[in-house]
Image (cartoon, rainbow, N blue to C red; front, side):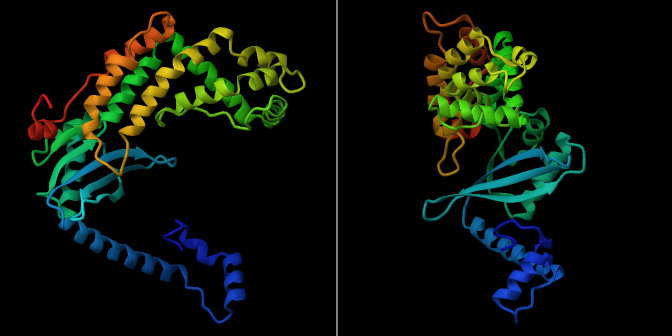
Length: 338
């Protein structure tokens, strides 16, 4: 229960849990926290042994790695392994997530990756490491001659999309939408008022979605939800029993803002579809890179006659920033022009 449901070790010390177990089985002695720790460690060792055995059956594997910071400002690095079984089943498993107290220099990252490869018996098995485009991560992998350094295509695409959001008029709309959604998220009165307006207009009772800089496609999600709830949101802001006049003046989106949201959504939805297709863990995605890139650059990011200037500028910024690449490991197998 502790490991399966990710419960804290202190769960077994809870008064409610002990009362429950006493009711279910009075003769059962609830194990102490120390006993649980010992059992979890034993289960971990068994899991590591089994995973090493599974990986050892594969001739080659690929790994992915990423460094991230928890809400407690503690830094961690996660390494994931991807391999194919003898039954041609693709497997993805997290090898380790460990704290990174040292500075995230390329040298330290490279040492951490090499140590992990040795610990898991992968020294001669790794053919590629997929990572983000951070300069330290790129340099760390390029200094390791044992495997290919492969920047994550989806991350590369997201960087290009972010450049599109830097276009002045688009950036202002995103900021205005963020303030509007934040108001509803922090005001119980506004939230309750929105529900009433949704009822009156027979709209789905969906909450507004706030975008996050670290969550891909979240601006698209925010725009989609606002577009769906436009009239309920406008009615809520216009109702003086719900929204003060000064707040409404600050929060209301202009007709031009709403038009930008409507006009840019098709492009954002295409980019979201591309990102989603390239983030699967159940099938190999590298063969999608060139078709997706070609489709984006020759169709979805091409300006359409009569399209608004804002959307044209957004598309141009994304297309200019999105430099297609073909990983060396892919070129070596199928040729540079594959």
